[in-house]
Picture 1: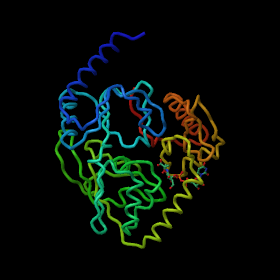
Picture 2: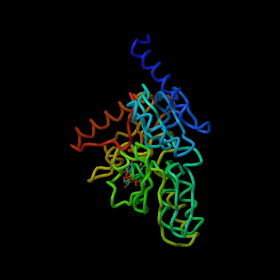
Picture 3: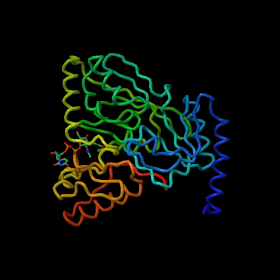
Picture 4: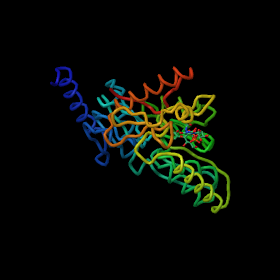
Length: 313
Ligand code: EPU
């Protein structure tokens, strides 16, 4: 049965969606009750009240100002590859910089300028095409530049901020500015500064190298990834690596591969991946995370921390 507060929340979201639609350009996309399962690689998650793809920085600024003025929550979505949205969905506005304006790529010598919406695969491929080394590790990360900056995403012993020269951001009042990494709070798998600012794009810097050698490294990384990580829907690694042992090895050595809750299970290929067999709910994944944390803590004393970002509900 739908409760009175639910009905009131729904009618409030319909009202603010109409007001928001009037503030943004006709090229922007706005949908109500958008299932987030469609926008996450894990393929779970309930609806966002409002989902917007701005078509310009002016659209983005208008949405941010509106949310600020009306105290409406918002969330910046990348490619949803490190994200778990609860089944109840997200009460507020999900903003995704997926339109072409935010995905531009410009090469200037060893400097490469990428929009936040550009795919990491394209970053790696463009770097190779231009003989710029240092971006090979981004080749198989299924994310966007904005998401990689926010999470300081990494692979193959490299991380995003290793190659960042500067980041262009918008604050929540719609003002644009630029940061250099020294002015940003960056750590393993997180950039706290980008909780308060939205990355619009970044200048990445590599070193000149031959296309052949860059290509060989990309192939080697890709082979390693395919040999050790599952192809089934997942959100990448579920947990950060504890300082003493990789979480995947720990879970594997404890015999927990294959542990299942509903449609979610620990991958047989890699102990730090939770895969969706197609029928998982967000709650299955959350319950499996809690179960793994409890078992690992009880057996080893090690506290696992989720790497995947959890929102909604
Ligand atoms: N291992 C096992 N069993 C497993 C999984 C791993 O014994 O089931 C062992 C491996 O043999 C290896 C060690 O654990 O000796 C580490 O494994 P791996 O090389 O796969 O690296 P990882 O630390 O588990 C990290 C990143 C991945 C990234 C890979 C490849 C984290 C949390 N994970 O995984 O990033 O793709 O390196 O470079 O730092 C992600 O962030 O979502 C992610 C997938």
